[in-house]
Image 1 (tube, rainbow, N blue to C red):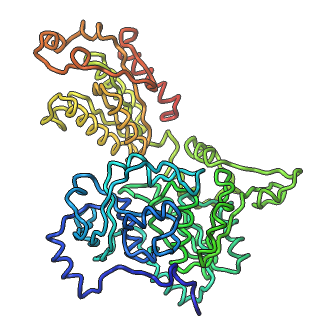
Image 2 (cartoon, rainbow, N blue to C red; image 1 turned 90 degrees about the vertical axis):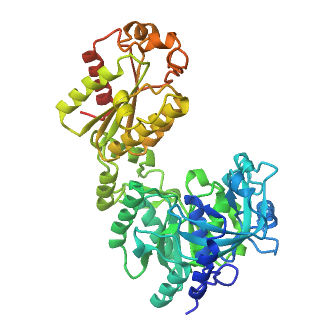
Image 3 (cartoon, rainbow, N blue to C red; image 1 turned 135 degrees about the vertical axis):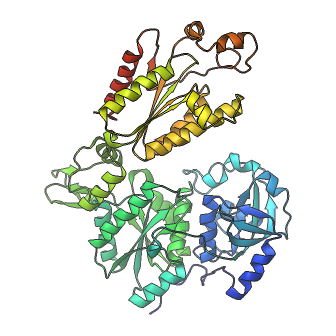
Length: 552
């Protein structure tokens, strides 16, 4: 039985023979080291495994620019995406063509060495794709002009380590061997970054059946962080789906892939990867946002030995009790649809989701991973001038939430954190930002684990507060409370005598006097403690939390 040929004629695996690995490891002690970013680690893994065959490493400048201009390597071969190793200026200035560098993961493990053939900087901004002007080429933004680009051959030492779902991780050679063993000569690949529900599965099953082929589901794994619940929940959902699938004709293989904002170029690159894994057909999803891309891709399909299949938009027809292509639904039939946004809203608000939309086991898994707001952890972040009343409100709020007893509650008061977590820091802008980021990190861990964090720092800078919000919202809820007591009122209180010292010049960079306080633009709530008691202020926060759905 013959499998589809790899792109370029053969799999180009770049790992050194075992008898040469020890020698290269020893030599690498003297090489300049570059710590690969999570994205670069994915690229290197794909290159070393042969998934990006026939490439033998990162492109040199001529190939990079030729591929960008015409999707053609300098040897005449087709390739859709430019690919080079991007490094910062300080490292780039140390390297010369002919040097060998060591590429390591975040733990310092040597993954590969690279003999540098080219090093250059972009002199112009590639902000839109020349060949596909309707899409943004995210790999060539103006921001990257300050970076150095390296090309060169790779010598693989060891694969990047993975501790999750290794039973579903295959190299192209390993998956090809499995296909050979199972007699799979025709394989339809469906790659996805999303969770699959009934519409997706009914569609890909039908397409595999029509092609008289087996089905390979390839979840795309991007730059995964430790504790990424979405990643783990998504794969567990696929496991549930596989249990209800035909075992002899369906399987799953995880694919590390760094997403490129490059539209059809990225799709063509993914098709090449599927061909290298031994697949004969590649499904790309025709949703409303991607309409017309099949026509754009068509002229380049002849370069591939894999057949591109365009999946239609599916719709559930109530009268038939099944999903069909939307274009086949009659005007008299009732078409039911739930958007992704509506699905997540229902998850968040604990609203019923109909059986026709997804599988019960998948829904149960997603409800665990994305609990409704009243079961999520969240952070209440009080910000305002010194003396505004943040700590007093925080104390009152702590008691009220403890009385409810629904979750563990932790108070991260500004003064307490300064003593316990940031005692070595001063009050420069850099140190104040670092202190707030430490508070944000601790609060994000509390939030991730289903607790409530109450934070009450001054946090004078909008940019830092935005960074903290982004950090915490990845894990749960974030509610910003601007304690908007005026400077005059705060200075009149001056319980600690800090404003007097600041006016006398004894305290430098004091917020509100010699350093600015940047008021929140869109906090969830503003409170002026001149207008209410601490009890009333805390109750207003409780009502806001109830309105937002975090408590009930």
